[in-house]
Image (cartoon, rainbow, N blue to C red; front, side, top):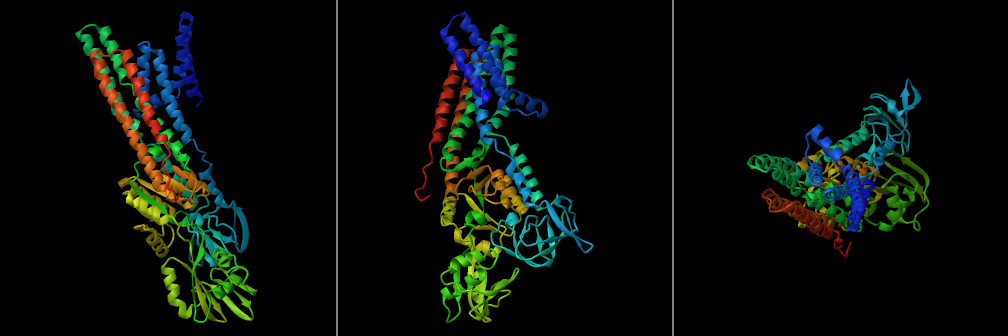
Length: 613
């Protein structure tokens, strides 16, 4: 912001000196205007020329450069300085909004341990994780992260795969099960055969996908640049024809002057600020609702979204597994089943244990002794002289409750069977529940003609069950990060698509989407870094509000752009015919700029927030 502000200060100082009058003040004013022109021009002229000569790219910056040169040649140094100031300020405001630290994405790699224990020749050796190669046999102890992708060859453990799949509920890892880098082993030790090098695994792939998607997105042209591409050569050709043909008719000096006036008449002063002033106003208004838009380009795209893809875990759901249903055998009570399960599970490290312990409470919990936990299967203990087992239906036979266990699993629950003395007494369903506003938010999106789809790494049964409850018609389940990103790329090619998520596994899809939206300040650094928009809260109803606000801002942008183009279309013929001189052309431009700024400021109105949000 320093150079644009210095340019603005110089312009104001020069104007003040002109008002004072006098030869000395006039000279000082011209020097000050020249400084203001240099301070402003240096922020965009070099980039515009590099884009033209290195890549043959014509943008709004080049047209502003040509217009400034024309104003200087006609002796209007103050107008040229003002033009450079306005454009440099608009660009600086957007650059400031886009300037984000890049540390979050690279922080992904911290999920991979620095060292790994490998089994070689019957002995254990600790080596740097980056030196791992395919075929190495890793020893992974309980609580450790797996250093690279591989296949379990021995052992059994509960695995936390949330870093890759985003799924909050655990999975059971056993021989033959494929695991990814960053996965955390739970209760049991594992021997894992590496299938990827330490520097080329799931997490490094995520980083590469995100960086590539961001680079591709960064090449997309802005509205003003798309308009400038045909405008710049057209104006230059017209000015050249005016000077050449007019000179052949007679009075070369008059027609050359008119050609320069044409260049100033075609100056996109209003166009240069039409979009930025609207974007800055709208972004500021959105931030007061907890909607953080990282760039003007992202805001433009947000207003054109026609499809929304939503991650399940932590976005549609609360990412807090809870006991949602308890089915008991004949003669048993719900409270007793929960008390037994809680008494045993409070000794467990399984991720579902906390949910069951919380539901069972401590006041009724019996005292458990001789606790034994079998990794990936369940846990058992002696309570009042009877063996109580709590675990998966694959380990604890649900007996007559098998039908209920199947029903719960079909509904997206994780099932835990409770048996006492070898007899099943109940089945507990644990599920990561939908956010209370999820169905309402989805309905609001669909009512506005926006298609909604769910993307998740979770199993298909759980995904379809939750999607039905939320009213999401399209479901894509059991997706890895690269598969999510591929789906988003394909969808974006057909319609502008927003991806909404909060986890590391969502990062590639967020970066690949037309607009990536990270939910919640507690989301992963990678998700927030990869996204174009971030919500500081978790209320899903902010999504339709944000889209509506961006759509209104986009409408204001369109109005401003249309007005800016209309001014050029009217002024250029008048300049060619000599009906308007340079002073009149500059005056019209200044009035147009004031009108555009006033209209753009309407976007600063904070969107009305639903009283229920």
